[in-house]
Length: 208
Image (cartoon, rainbow, N blue to C red; front, side):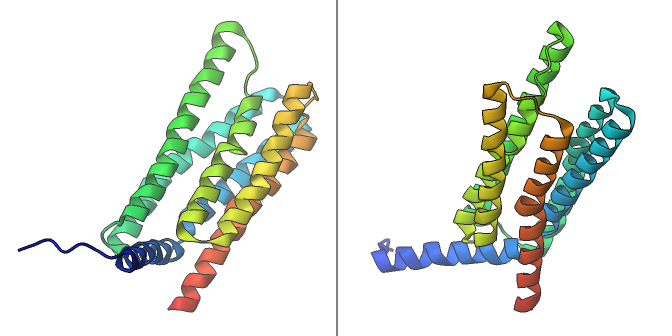
């Protein structure tokens, strides 16, 4: 049988269908995003309160709870979502690869900061705030573009603006006090994760 070549119109229709299927699957469940958003905000608020009350920097180790809890919960929630939604399309795989890169980058960044701290006693942990508010927002904006979800693009843009502000403070030698950086972090994750997650779930309910 002779292979039939797709016309430009058919190719565009196929791409549009793939994006729509991915969007419907993703919009069907914003719970993973909500989990990361609420987890990040709760841990940040807890660290902030404890630092203000005790002035003990040891409470900063609580930040690791985000990676540990989120890293355990995400594969479980993702598997349930895959079982419900069926086979992944190319767009699904693309968004998955975007967040895999973010996850691997976060592990590498953490190891470098830990190495600087343990081997030389240098405090490089401020870089993790810049990472969380630059790499993560850019990944979210990329995903929003792929699935055509404006709330992800807008939320990511706000988070990115916060991240650029923090990088400018680090470059200029401006002290990053908890009273400045932690409220900024919380606001950014509310805009990046919590608000888009609720919007996604709301759209899913309207489609049912």
